[in-house]
Length: 560
Image: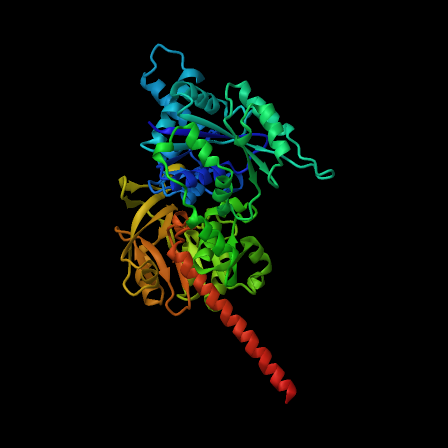
């Protein structure tokens, strides 16, 4: 029977429950335990797939094609366990299932209520997510006191009773602020947050206290006394310089030891080996070079919209010992001010997105990269727009566009593909009237790489498996025109959809229909991002050498 660690948060949201859960999962995994990760989200959407990035941030996609909360990305970056459909449950999904059962007659004769029907469904899904793991981390979104999250909190309270306290640990993350003027540490928010939690029947076993600096012993003792938590279990969750340092910071305070002891797992564990995480931190802290990367996006005001991309670039920096400075450039600003905003960049990345806003700015950035031999990586929409840009400005396909933006485009080089093969679900179909929430090509699918291509060299194998999230595709009616016109089409799905495009006459120009950022992690990196960063370093070094040479020439001329 799996053991459970339930992670709740209080006072304010966005304190870092996801990273804390993932970090603890990483330590427990390093101790030899099989770890599962589950996120419970209190919003009514069945999944985050149709939510605005400004509202929700990134939508993370799992291997099995589930659109999930962005915290699952943290889970997969810290823990080797692959998440999936049973790793993220929303209020909408829970209620959808209960109502379907009610309509089917499963509750015939009963009044369907939050308790027990909704809470029973939540508990059933938690157990599904745990699977055959030794320990399942269960993170509850929102904060204690939110009306939306109360059914989830009630469900985990019930599990604590039903499974017994040797099978469940309650860990509460709360804020310990410092008053700016006096510098006084305030424990009252934590006390009141725990009081709220205890008011619904949950006594936390462990407190993770988010603070700027480690809590002094006096404050830890005070918190312990007022919250009925052991002093040793009042853990400082400090503002770390590097998120990948957090497993070591928590391990140093014996958080994993407390968990193992309370869940009686001593006989199943070994000492934690965190040397791989130390290696990641050391590589980040001691780079041998630096690059400036322009990320030209539509949602740059909301950095969480590109969190997996940001981390993938960081991971590539670890693999190449490069300090990566990401410059977030709003694509609409390029439309207004031009590509002068891209001056001094060592590489350009155009990420995914939906809708027409900012498209021409992205196309201008791609053209700038192509014409000035600047390394370019396009992802999803970034590939589609690279195809459009090349069609317009190289192949002479005037008005080339995607039918997403112009249904009457004279050259629909990107279009809605009506049928494709899904490895998990077989043949899938869609049309213009299909609901947007269920008509994308989603999840991990095979990609066949062309011999001699840059992609083949980077991956080191003929067939790869990457995750997708898109509705529109390269229009295969234009295959020959692009091939004959100099664009290399170097990756295809088994049923013939274009997955990768390259320019062989360019130092480094590659774009993918899939999302490689979803499978990058700090310990291993990802071959595309590592290759992209290596190209950026070469471009940077060449620019520096060129500047030095020009300076020397001017100096010589001056002496003459």
